[in-house]
Amino acid sequence: RFGESVGIAGATVVAGASGINTSAGAAYVYSLQNPLDVTVAAGGTVTSIPAGINCAGAKTCTADFDTGSTVTLTAAPVAGYTFTGWGGVCSGSAPTCTVVMSADQTVSATFAVAPTPTPNPTATPSPTAEPFPIATPTANYALQIEVVGASGSVTSQPVGIDCGTVCSQTFPAGSAVYLTAVPKPGYEFVGWLDCDAIQKDLVCRMTLTGPKPRVVASFRPDSGATPSPAPGVTPAPTPVPTTTPAPSASPAPTAAPTPVPTTAPNPTPTPAPAANQAALNVVTVGAGVVNSSEGGIDCGPVCSASYDLGSVVTLTAVPAEGYKFKRWIGAGCSGRKPCTVTLNRAKTVKAKFVRNGKS
Image (spheres, rainbow, N blue to C red):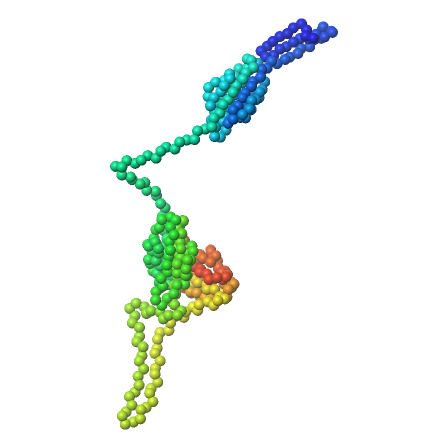
């Protein structure tokens, strides 16, 4: 039973109540609210501040808000849709709408599939206009070649490299350059060092995707041929055997023995490795020698020795006076310490020496 007084303040109603003892009364507080209905089409969501409405597409959501309060609604399309506008007590296409809850209110939000952009038609160039192609800058990389042994040369395809000592040529980035080793008469090709891929015994393929180390081609005297004489040196003629003519009245004497022609000895060739062996080739750059703990290697510019497959060979670099050993290259060797090579196949190691004081 309500008592003697009723008061209304905004959305709040305060009613007094009296009991049996009129000196002890009670007060009851009631909040007045109105519903807000929001209908959302497919393709987006609508949320509210204060909270209460969080409505995804293709349905109607309802929440109660204090009478006289202000509710801000925000429309947000999902991917591939656009917000097209409000309905009900809201209007326009701005993403937000403010609703005053002076009574029960109804709002709707619509969305539409976003249009696909139409590509611009390709303009037809004027027949009189002279096209000027824009050159795209291309990176270039230098490929360096070093020939060891002074007994052969290296050529390239595409052309650009044709040298017998040290040379360099620049090629566009990404180029595949094929190098061919060409031994001189009386010499044979030993092998490549720092080659990307060996196509054949004499052909090395380099793919210039970035800076490359110097490629080394090594040659040595052919084990089955007599080396050609050095330029400017006339080989000694082969002696012709002679016999002493017999006197007419005397019996023919026994012919003098045929002298054996004397020729300069060939350099001792390195024997070809047997089927169960592998060759270890050593190339030195600068002044110094390399020797092996197992014997077989003790050389300057180029040497080679054959070992049984699976052999482990330790190489030691010994610089000449005024030089220092810088590093190993190839066959898994690096740094300055003695290098250990496991011969499961033919391998080539390069030892680099530099003068003291140089890095």
